[in-house]
Length: 172
Image 1 (spheres, one colour):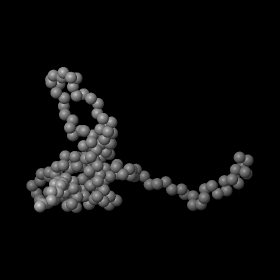
Image 2 (cartoon, rainbow, N blue to C red):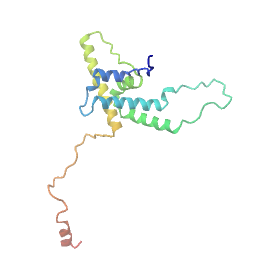
Image 3 (cartoon, helix red, strand yellow):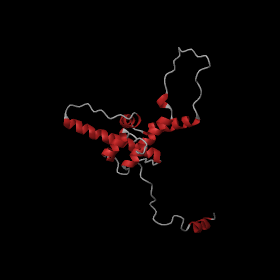
Image 4 (tube, helix red, strand yellow):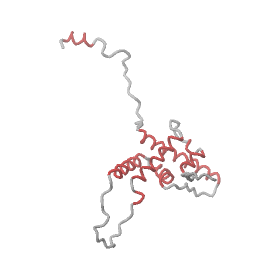
Protein backbone atom coordinates (compact mmCIF):
# COMPACT_ATOMS: atom_id res chain seq x y z
CA UNK A 1 0.00 0.00 0.00
CA UNK A 2 1.15 3.45 -0.78
CA UNK A 3 1.30 5.89 2.06
CA UNK A 4 -0.54 9.08 1.44
CA UNK A 5 1.73 11.99 2.08
CA UNK A 6 0.94 15.66 2.00
CA UNK A 7 1.17 17.21 -1.43
CA UNK A 8 4.38 19.06 -2.11
CA UNK A 9 4.22 22.78 -1.54
CA UNK A 10 4.81 24.77 -4.69
CA UNK A 11 7.74 27.11 -4.43
CA UNK A 12 7.12 30.81 -4.79
CA UNK A 13 9.08 32.81 -7.35
CA UNK A 14 11.15 34.31 -4.53
CA UNK A 15 12.05 30.83 -3.26
CA UNK A 16 12.97 29.75 -6.80
CA UNK A 17 15.18 32.81 -7.19
CA UNK A 18 16.82 32.03 -3.84
CA UNK A 19 17.52 28.47 -5.01
CA UNK A 20 19.10 29.85 -8.20
CA UNK A 21 21.36 32.12 -6.13
CA UNK A 22 19.71 35.37 -7.21
CA UNK A 23 19.47 36.63 -3.62
CA UNK A 24 23.23 36.63 -3.10
CA UNK A 25 23.67 40.13 -4.58
CA UNK A 26 23.62 43.40 -2.69
CA UNK A 27 24.99 44.14 0.75
CA UNK A 28 27.19 41.43 2.25
CA UNK A 29 25.85 42.00 5.77
CA UNK A 30 22.62 40.16 4.87
CA UNK A 31 22.44 36.58 3.70
CA UNK A 32 20.18 35.04 1.11
CA UNK A 33 18.16 33.54 3.95
CA UNK A 34 17.64 36.96 5.58
CA UNK A 35 16.34 38.33 2.29
CA UNK A 36 14.05 35.34 1.76
CA UNK A 37 12.61 35.66 5.28
CA UNK A 38 12.03 39.39 4.80
CA UNK A 39 10.25 38.81 1.50
CA UNK A 40 8.06 36.11 3.04
CA UNK A 41 7.24 38.31 6.02
CA UNK A 42 6.36 41.18 3.67
CA UNK A 43 3.93 38.86 1.85
CA UNK A 44 2.50 37.57 5.14
CA UNK A 45 1.76 41.14 6.28
CA UNK A 46 0.16 41.87 2.90
CA UNK A 47 -1.99 38.75 3.08
CA UNK A 48 -3.04 39.27 6.72
CA UNK A 49 -3.89 42.90 6.04
CA UNK A 50 -6.82 41.83 3.87
CA UNK A 51 -5.72 44.03 0.99
CA UNK A 52 -5.78 41.00 -1.31
CA UNK A 53 -9.54 40.69 -1.07
CA UNK A 54 -10.56 44.35 -1.13
CA UNK A 55 -12.95 45.08 -3.97
CA UNK A 56 -14.89 48.11 -5.06
CA UNK A 57 -18.38 48.38 -3.63
CA UNK A 58 -21.32 47.99 -5.96
CA UNK A 59 -23.31 51.08 -5.08
CA UNK A 60 -26.14 50.14 -7.43
CA UNK A 61 -26.86 46.87 -5.61
CA UNK A 62 -29.94 46.78 -3.41
CA UNK A 63 -29.08 46.31 0.27
CA UNK A 64 -31.87 45.12 2.50
CA UNK A 65 -30.05 44.09 5.66
CA UNK A 66 -27.73 47.08 5.97
CA UNK A 67 -24.93 45.60 3.92
CA UNK A 68 -21.51 44.31 4.84
CA UNK A 69 -19.96 47.56 6.04
CA UNK A 70 -18.55 46.25 9.30
CA UNK A 71 -15.22 47.46 10.63
CA UNK A 72 -12.12 45.37 10.12
CA UNK A 73 -10.86 43.30 13.06
CA UNK A 74 -7.98 44.71 15.09
CA UNK A 75 -5.53 42.07 13.84
CA UNK A 76 -6.25 43.09 10.25
CA UNK A 77 -5.66 46.75 11.05
CA UNK A 78 -2.39 45.93 12.82
CA UNK A 79 -1.20 43.82 9.86
CA UNK A 80 -2.23 46.61 7.47
CA UNK A 81 -0.19 49.10 9.50
CA UNK A 82 2.82 46.76 9.47
CA UNK A 83 2.50 46.29 5.70
CA UNK A 84 2.30 50.02 4.94
CA UNK A 85 5.26 50.77 7.22
CA UNK A 86 7.30 48.13 5.40
CA UNK A 87 6.19 49.51 2.03
CA UNK A 88 7.21 53.03 3.07
CA UNK A 89 10.71 51.84 3.99
CA UNK A 90 11.37 50.77 0.38
CA UNK A 91 13.09 53.23 -1.94
CA UNK A 92 11.13 54.12 -5.06
CA UNK A 93 13.43 52.24 -7.43
CA UNK A 94 13.08 48.99 -5.45
CA UNK A 95 9.29 48.97 -5.01
CA UNK A 96 8.50 47.41 -8.40
CA UNK A 97 10.80 44.36 -8.25
CA UNK A 98 10.01 43.61 -4.60
CA UNK A 99 6.23 43.92 -4.90
CA UNK A 100 6.13 42.18 -8.28
CA UNK A 101 8.02 39.14 -7.00
CA UNK A 102 7.05 38.96 -3.31
CA UNK A 103 3.41 40.04 -3.40
CA UNK A 104 2.19 39.08 -6.87
CA UNK A 105 4.45 36.01 -7.23
CA UNK A 106 5.35 36.86 -10.84
CA UNK A 107 8.59 36.64 -12.68
CA UNK A 108 10.35 39.78 -13.79
CA UNK A 109 9.77 40.48 -17.46
CA UNK A 110 12.72 42.05 -19.23
CA UNK A 111 11.81 43.00 -22.81
CA UNK A 112 15.02 43.22 -24.80
CA UNK A 113 16.15 41.84 -28.12
CA UNK A 114 19.90 41.96 -27.62
CA UNK A 115 21.31 39.10 -25.50
CA UNK A 116 24.12 41.18 -24.00
CA UNK A 117 21.67 43.90 -22.99
CA UNK A 118 19.30 41.25 -21.62
CA UNK A 119 22.02 39.78 -19.39
CA UNK A 120 22.89 43.24 -18.12
CA UNK A 121 19.24 44.01 -17.34
CA UNK A 122 18.89 40.70 -15.48
CA UNK A 123 21.90 41.58 -13.32
CA UNK A 124 20.44 45.03 -12.62
CA UNK A 125 17.11 43.43 -11.69
CA UNK A 126 18.85 41.01 -9.31
CA UNK A 127 20.70 43.89 -7.70
CA UNK A 128 17.53 45.97 -7.29
CA UNK A 129 15.62 43.03 -5.86
CA UNK A 130 18.35 42.31 -3.32
CA UNK A 131 18.74 45.98 -2.36
CA UNK A 132 14.99 46.23 -1.80
CA UNK A 133 14.99 43.05 0.29
CA UNK A 134 17.93 44.49 2.24
CA UNK A 135 15.79 47.53 3.08
CA UNK A 136 12.99 45.22 4.22
CA UNK A 137 15.48 43.26 6.31
CA UNK A 138 16.63 46.46 7.98
CA UNK A 139 12.99 47.36 8.63
CA UNK A 140 11.96 43.98 10.02
CA UNK A 141 15.11 43.36 12.07
CA UNK A 142 15.08 46.88 13.46
CA UNK A 143 18.59 47.77 12.35
CA UNK A 144 18.52 51.37 11.26
CA UNK A 145 21.64 52.89 9.77
CA UNK A 146 21.58 56.66 9.66
CA UNK A 147 24.77 57.02 7.67
CA UNK A 148 26.43 59.04 10.41
CA UNK A 149 29.49 57.79 12.25
CA UNK A 150 29.20 57.31 16.00
CA UNK A 151 30.47 60.24 18.02
CA UNK A 152 33.65 59.57 19.92
CA UNK A 153 35.16 61.59 22.71
CA UNK A 154 38.50 63.31 22.14
CA UNK A 155 39.34 62.77 25.81
CA UNK A 156 41.40 59.64 26.33
CA UNK A 157 41.13 59.28 30.13
CA UNK A 158 38.35 59.27 32.69
CA UNK A 159 36.39 62.50 32.27
CA UNK A 160 35.19 62.49 35.91
CA UNK A 161 38.67 62.11 37.34
CA UNK A 162 39.32 64.98 39.78
CA UNK A 163 35.73 66.25 39.59
CA UNK A 164 35.20 66.05 43.35
CA UNK A 165 38.40 68.02 44.02
CA UNK A 166 37.35 70.62 41.46
CA UNK A 167 33.96 71.07 43.17
CA UNK A 168 35.66 71.45 46.59
CA UNK A 169 38.01 74.13 45.21
CA UNK A 170 35.10 76.09 43.76
CA UNK A 171 32.97 75.66 46.87
CA UNK A 172 30.25 73.77 45.11
